[in-house]
Length: 634
Image 1 (tube, helix red, strand yellow):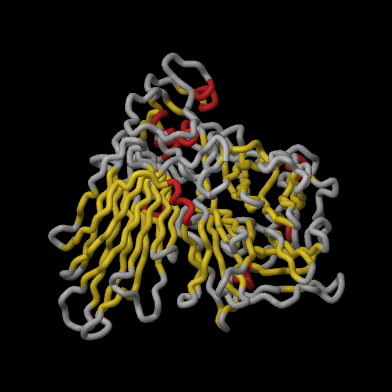
Image 2: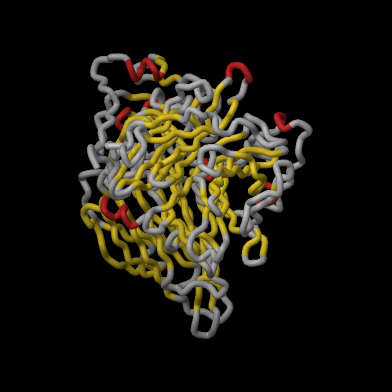
């Protein structure tokens, strides 16, 4: 991710004294305690604030008062987050034996983007996580301005970290980028430490020093997990060639020495609608352009059912676009061999976004606030995807890398999604992304399980439960929806919406819903012909930016050509304080959304449904409390 210039913000204390956030969080004021950074859940009732601050119109666009308790209460508890500081891209994720490792971009010094290290957590069950010391630090000549993003590849039992090292920012005015590698020290299997807490950078670093012709060292980063074919390893590096977002392919006979093969894919090739006219000089390319833009964090993989096809994923950022940063994927074909004839003639467009003999239009990976997604495979054959979810609270711009008074008072930024299993829907020719079943190990008490019927006279019903341990802020909500057709003449359509409402207090709430159209397909049959999934944050209140993406996040959910049966609608919502992960119809629609209510009350849940024509909706719900994911030892 390209950083923005950081700057200091002011907050105003309740007695009117302006202080920088650095002094506010470090000074010893009477009655002011340090921000909590423990693993356990926060109390349900958050009142009695220790210090009142204000987010003024000048630094947030609205006058918002909050206590530091209320700011701290936004911290997710069953997702991977930093205790303090800044987190962004997931990087090296891999399984080695019985343990799962997740590494990520991390600035421990402040809750803003800064020269990143690689943070490290480990799990024995993909649900409970232990924090470990940083795996990589920016401490050598080729990465002293930051250990940028990359990936992990397990080769003959040894995990190899491929990453981008950056330096010379002061000299060049940009981050000069090369590729490097690191391995555990000592190497497995002689390593007595299964947690892999010590890593050594290769003496051959940087292992990829030069960009291809038409590339530049300011847009040359984020190597993928390597794959092997015919005894040769391959990895793609993101960036720009001739100003077009590109995935540049490199090969290695030994996973240590690499040479350029050719262009795996490009912005123009993967998205035929993109029009990018190359500049005369590659260094003048615009990373954030409306037409030509850089590709970050590429990923290249296959999953069962693709029948020889592959998925190509990339991330890009466009100034003025909403969302500013987005993750995309296409399905397509790849050749049987990546070999080239000689060292002069490089391959071009090895991957094409043509699948099932048709051009494949790029799809959003998620409709919400995610970026820099990365996948990895497990020994059991599953492929998992994780994404960075950035902050969108009032005052944040783009991906909030400079921070705000609110995020600085919270003391942290960034969260990773629950690992999502990647599967292929052959009927829709789309990928599905759904939470791993292991997350259910974090379920605690079953708070509610029942069915209700809603109609025009009873459009909303509250799900009564008492949850004092985490204030209703840590939930797994499962909702099955069955529509009953209205009585009407053939050919008449009826719109509907149905979902859940998180009630934060008497004046603030957040709605998560499916909406769509049902049509009469025959004299006896109605079907859902169109479907969408949305998070309505317009009334979420507090520090929620209710104008971000118009207050709504979401979009269309694909349905088969013949429509969906009226009893084939599912909605799942993982509620973890300021993070909502929403899944429609088993992961065919996804939204990672951020809400920041400042309520001191326990949250409650209601179910609602409305239909354009007379009819009803049967909603069957199960709601579980969720425990913290953090443990002291796996």
